[in-house]
Image 1 (tube, rainbow, N blue to C red):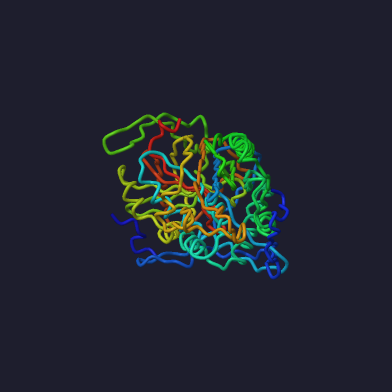
Image 2 (image 1 turned 90 degrees about the vertical axis):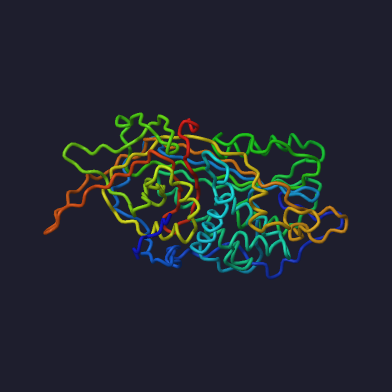
Length: 492
């Protein structure tokens, strides 16, 4: 089956007893200059069958309106754990120092994030059922880890994560991207909070320069804990931090720690967005949802009800004979959900096999503003906690998990006591909820008169069978969350 375009174009810890410190001369700062206009990510890549330019958005702004309840939300947390040869946390990385580094273009980081996102999806999607994770959370955690990696360990991470720049520019770029995402909240109507934390063993020596770069580039909160004396108390402290940062949506991320733990690095992402155009709760009805060609369950399908004498709202839309793609923006229109719906009721597995960053860019690059009759199910579910060690190793990141080969001397300096670090686990847990609530549009629907042309029939986007969905930042295309709805009944 071809889903192509069909010919359409410890707070800075003091030195340890051995007095080791890393030299800091020439280490770049992560304070980036003012960001320039970001180029669109997908314009660089084209499929062999052609493809149009990716649009940064579709439809006209209808105004922000007043805020209602949250239509859609996503929460995710990840952790990478370092032991006596181990690392905990889902957010490691760093750069810092004296001279300003020109940050890597956030569009290039978004492109790298998306390539990794879809490759990781291909690994974790092999298990059946619903799926939802935050590739940005995973990449952020591993980027922080990469900041302390050296030699082959660092090289493998760079290849697996598709990092587009050298160490200095890379982490300065992550700092710039973090600032850009933080600025989205100032638009109003969405809540997007990214929090990073580092939890080192209080008696273990880490390089002060590494900890400083972590704080500067990633805004990391650094809190020493007593893993050797009270590992379970340390676990409870970290879990409480995650729960607070995710508004209690992610609980018990870490099930156990032990006295060999030396550091836990955690990234938490919280998102709550209100639709730019809200669904009508009175129009939601129980309808059949075909989980396969032979089986159907009942699910509440939401839709838009146009005002009397009015028209349906416009959304970014693209289709071919195999696939429909719909973009639903949130208030402010900086963030949006993209839904990929195969036309065949049993077409999701084939769609997943064809999925790549290039292909996704091609599909979303064809979005045009259309009036669409939308039917989308309500759903809510939690995915994880899942250990991503095996998928990451399958993508080529092997040395980091092996006590015999892992090199994280960029965190600790050379150690003669054999108490080096390796990653023991990369844990990830995510929550998503989609419902009708959102923003009331501040502008009425316009009736456009066209000369010498008949109106096109309104396409029907009826998501009553399994589909893929993602939440992205529209300017760069950065995928914040990625998932699959296979079974609405299991999502309640």
